[in-house]
Length: 356
Image (cartoon, rainbow, N blue to C red; front, side):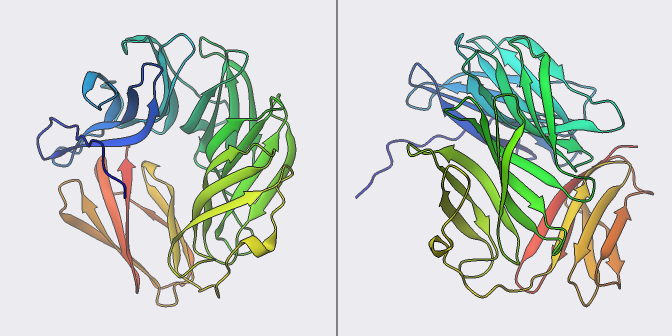
C-alpha cells in the first residue's frame, strides 16, 4: 500500500487569475525548483508571466520569482534545470519566441535572452534544456510559424554556438524532449506530420555531438501518435513515453515503448487495436493578426465556437468543406480567445492570441 507523503498547492492570486506548472526538478539541497506560467487574467485578457518557484524538501516555499516583461502579451517557462554553479536556467517562450533566463541560486537574473532567426522565421517556444558535459547548454525548440524543429547549443552566457534545423517546408516538426547521450551526441523525441495521412507520428532522431543527424525514425499508425519524453537506457537503447490514437483501446492512450540503440523496435511490443478514423483539427498559427487552423476528415464540415478570455461566446466558425484551412480573427481586437470544437466523442478547446 502506498501513502501520500505530502501535498502542496501554490497560488495567491484572485480567482480570475491562474498559475500553471510545466516542469519540476529536484535540486542539490533536496528541495525542488518549479517553472510555469503565472497570472493569466481571464477578465482582462492579460497573458501569463514566467514563474520560478523554489521549495524545500517538504514542498514549503523558499522563494518565488515572477519575471515580467510588460511589452510582451504572454510568457511562460516550459523547462527548468539546476546548473553546475548552483543557479537555474529556464527555457520557454515570450510572445511565442524562444526565451531563456539564467539566475543565481536565489533566483536573481544573471542574464536573459530571446532569440530570433533571419529570413522571416523566428525561433519559437523552447521545450527542453540541459547542461552538457562541457558546461554549456543544449536545447530544443520549434520555429515560428511552426514548421521546423531546432537543436541549439549555447555557451555559458547564452550565445549560440550552433543551431541545427530538422524538417521540411511541407511538414510540421515538434521537438518535445532531448537528452545528451553517452557518446556525447543527442537524442530528440517529438512528433511530425505524415505527408500521406496528414496525421502526426512519433519522431525520434539521433545526432552526433555537433547536432548532425545520424539516423531518424518514425513510429505510429493511422491515427495521431506523439512522443513526449525520451531517456537513454543502460543497454544503449531508448525508452519513449507519449500518447497514441493508433494503438490501445480508443481515444488517446498512454504509449510507452522501447527501441534499441539504432531506434529499431520489435513490432510485437506494440499492442495493436484496429485503428479508427477520427476527425483531425489543429491550430498551425496561434499567435499573430489571424489564427490559422487546419482540419481534415470532417464529412459534415467544420464547426467551432469562439470564446473570449471571460468565457463569453463572440463568434462561430463554419465551413462546409470536409478538409481545408481557415483563417480567423481579421476583424477581431487584440486579446486571448479560445476556439472550441465538438466532435462525436470529445470536446477540444485551444487558446489563440491575436496581435495586430
